Length: 496
Image 1: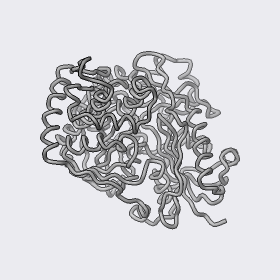
Image 2 (image 1 turned 45 degrees about the vertical axis):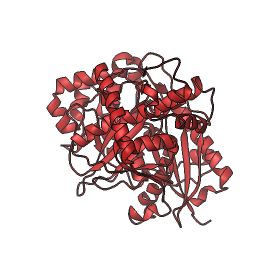
Image 3 (image 1 turned 120 degrees about the vertical axis):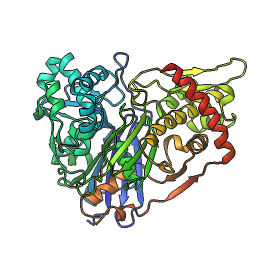
Image 4 (image 1 turned 60 degrees about the vertical axis):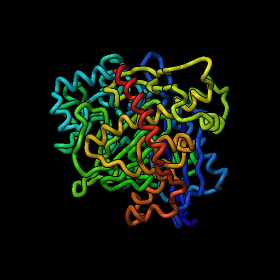
């Protein structure tokens, strides 16, 4: 059998996506996702957000089945596998590799106080110069929460891992992680280029709970016979790439060099810029991590702005206000409303503590509602504008750090499918937006080809990826949105 394909998985909080890339020409052969409706996020208490790691594994199987309905490929036609995953989550497993509790995922806010105390105790200057971030609400702090609040569970932990590490464990039987992954959990010291022992020691966490480090690109393990039989793949197929969803999204869009910028608007909204300098925000409102292409010879860091309430707001509106109408119908209703939504303002901060707001959890707010003037179309438009305005607020912080935001690349997916959203984004930020025919799963598949040595360099893996839409700012709309955004920002600052 001739090896034809590269396989990529993207483990999101809404769904698991799978993509098949043709090696010969770089074209996307098939893409699929599961479940059809968004996966639930459990909130047993206010500020909590959890998911079952085995649900991700189940949906991965379903996504792979859907992929085969489009292309009837055989297991031995797949040369390598890449994994992208939702960042900052915590998965705790026992010696048998079984999860001991639900994963505490990225938008869970329970660990904020632990991170803030560590930031103060270790010293803000020390934390920022060594970790480039406050310990904040990241993976290390979530593990501290488990240690303090679920001591019986903590005692049973054999390894802690990120969501993508867990999927790699299910595929290969090996508990491993990456430097990029450790950096996103505040488990990496940039200055010493080693595990963040200072934070672990402060938290009283044993370094041995961390998994072995493997390269981001390169063999990270091989598919076990058990996983191969379950998934219809070939035992011994290498997993040759793994990265968090936002660094991977940037990679998927060929955002590799200093000054290049990517965006995504899925469950959360993100703007991610690459730099070769060690830079950080003193208030840790935007965060610096190791980019996937980082080497000691050519350092690459990713500055990440995240707004939690993005696609999840749109999804919430669809279920609760639009009787599960299609997103296309919602976009059409939003498009029928003039910019500014006739004075209605949406603040989309309803999905946990927001880093860009210094880990405050304001909750979502709708301001200016007039019963005799506003309808669902106004709400839909105000929501999309509010999401963009939240991203613009964070982008101003990135610009204060020296990022030049001129052209932004994104996949033609999720909220960028909305003409309203794309127009508001371009005209509020003043950036040219390039939309590509790619997504995180396709990017992970391409990257797996580099990691497996199938492609000789990064550039060669992007054949078959093209700009399918380009959005330029319009002078009149730019001025209009400058005023609308200014009013929105002024109202936000009153709440902070």
